[in-house]
Length: 276
Length: 364
Ligand SMILES: Nc1ncnc2c1ncn2[C@@H]1O[C@H](COP(=O)(O)OP(=O)(O)O)[C@@H](O)[C@H]1O
Ligand SMILES: [Mg+2]
Image 1 (cartoon, rainbow over the protein chains, first blue to last red):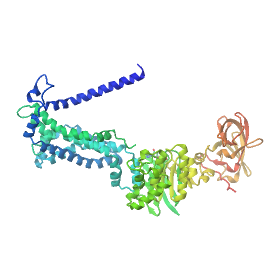
Image 2: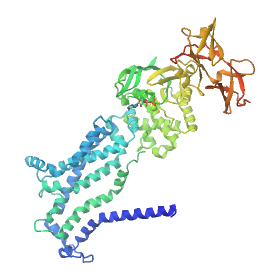
Image 3: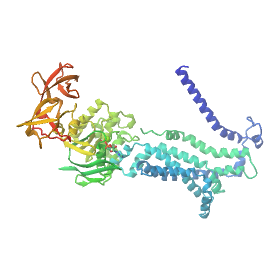
Image 4: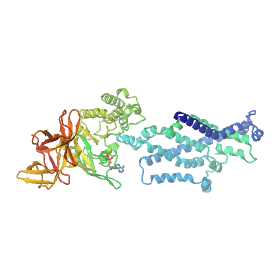
């Protein structure tokens, strides 16, 4: 084989591999989407039917049984709200750790990340009791607080990694130019980090949107976001696959569309390094 | 009148003692160059003056004000970094005006200042570009422009030319010298390149291992180095240093034994007592080739032709070679044995601690 052929083969193989992975990842979503247009009978038929007459019945039923807009609004408020609060806390934290590191900075970062290793169920009871005692059960406030704390370590870590790679001399130049610490952050660090911050925010929003554990345990109806709505279709009268799929499709749709529009930020943010 | 006074300045990085008691006074309008080998603390000293590093002892006074504890942003100093450190998200115009906008200067005044600075640095056509669309030389100009537009008390430069190619470096060096003439502002310039130091400086500060080795005008340092370190650091090719282990006094003269050959040195040029041994320093241009007589003789090992001049490497003994400056179209041949005459008034003696023990006579 010549070098050229080898190179071509390599491209084809990587392409094939990438497509396989993408298809495997995409298949469940595709199946959910298809199923949401089937009748309950078609949904559980074996072998599964690929060709059928699509129906919108499931969507109608879901809309009748649960208030989609209400749950969607809860999802929007909790995921965007907690992301904004987390960013407000994380940006100065990451900034100080990246530009004024102390002896323990690395340890603090690791410790923060280690909190993510604890299974959430381990703190369910204390948090449930705290929420109950403060009257926060089934409130968006509780979810916003929990989501903020849940994502803070990841957000700080991501921003820290980005800030650490910003050339220090640019900030020093600003300092020499008369910039106060506030000016430094607002006029130099933030504009240079738009990409990193938006992709971090996007990640946080997606994580909150898809969060189910706390939503299910801390909310009933008033504050229930879309994940809790989906779950209500797997109980109590047994499983309704088609309706469950319809509910899930409705729950995923906004975030998928949002993600689609933010693609550019996401790629830019994840590839970083646009500074040097 | 002293403008910038540095008194017993210390800097420790944890256990590393980077600045070991720096004392220096700089007068207004001076162009001072800090020079020294890599790692000697030049950048640390400059950054401590800038306030980017905090000192761990001593103090700094600028224009009658103690600025030791003042924040960088309030010191009214401008700095040009080796990496230029332009703001990547701003256009050239915004880079130039950043400091003025922070200082709440009026729009009309900003516009006028940016215009005049960009005109003088030939940046007019680039004002709307982002730094990444500029060449290295252009970035350098913007960095300099950003400093001068503010009219600071002192300019600080940290190896500003070391990222440029050789030709551009020479050109920018000249521009900096012109700029200093035009503005008359105090400048402190850090470099490891002794040629830059010699050509730009009113006064050169030679640093070595966190201490000032010597301060003086370029010519003072060249002719009257205090130590072997300075003698070797300044001048290309380097000063020749030859150990002399036998020194005998004959009335008003010293007979110094240089590897079996003798040179005669006047006693009254000696500082302090008669040494037993010394290191004899002679610059390549203070020796001339002669047909007859002369002070030393040796065998030509190699001749380097530079076009405008030539350097002959002369072997005095098996392990001692010295360099002599020769005329451009010298007919010297490798292996040839030649005699040289030394300009004795320029010879310097160092003791075993590498300190100078002779004086250079005043030039007439
Ligand atoms: N942030 C730092 N932490 C520890 N040591 C440092 C730091 N910055 C500089 N040094 C040390 O201080 C010495 C002087 O550094 P520097 O001033 O940068 O030298 P140069 O003369 O090359 O500019 C060097 O030995 C360097 O290793
Ligand atoms: Mg340096």
